[in-house]
Image 1 (cartoon, protein in one colour):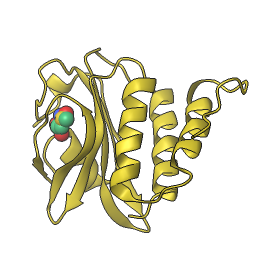
Image 2: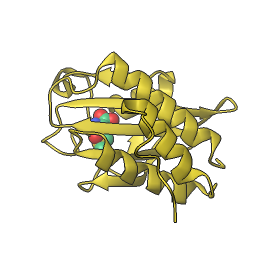
Image 3: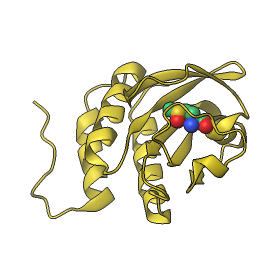
Length: 159
Ligand code: SME
């Protein structure tokens, strides 16, 4: 039984960080932890229609554990929002995906997107991709909070 902090006085991303630490504390497997993290984000972060991973495989990203509608499976590094985040190793926070050159539309309901590159010991592991039907869903504070969650995932997972 995993005890997730609830009445701790924590809130927002500080609470989510404490919950994620508890959720991943006893397991280090990549598929298991990525699956748990995707489900956790999809249900705990408001306004998402997709949350999940693309994993680096050679010069492509390949679909990993996710929650949401079925998605494109392979994305070349440098293509779309995910491929740009992977190639540049820079978070991509996109208020309007329709204005992003080369955006890959997996779900026409998506309007904004946040993609965080996952880099461990200098190696690109993949990206964490969050999509929203809301325009400009992700603020600077969301980016910082979600990057902190991604760092917890990387620290607690063998990859
Ligand atoms: N929109 C992404 C593709 C992945 S889906 O959103 C799940 C992109 O342009 O890279």
